[in-house]
Amino acid sequence: MKNNFRVLLAKRRKKVSDVHKATGISKTSLTALYYERTKKPDIETLQKVSEYLGVTIDELLTVEN
Image (cartoon, rainbow, N blue to C red; front, side, top):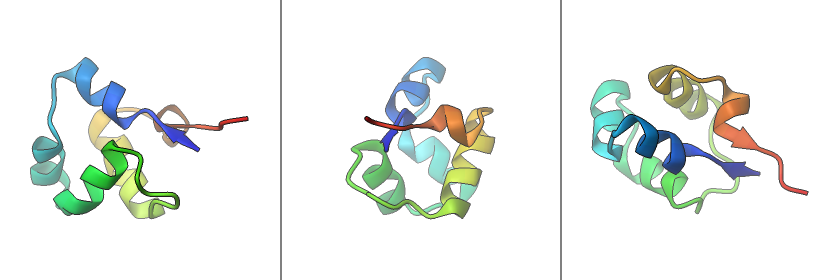
């Protein structure tokens, strides 16, 4: 899985700290998602992030071949 979190944040001119403040998700989890260090992100985290960014989870994540 590849995530588009970094790209989506850049398009919206948002920072990890903005997502943290709005969603309550820890900065550690968000930073790991941002740098694609997490292999199995929690579904609740993905839902909150996608809702905050106004995208679907499918738009947040893409399948790598």
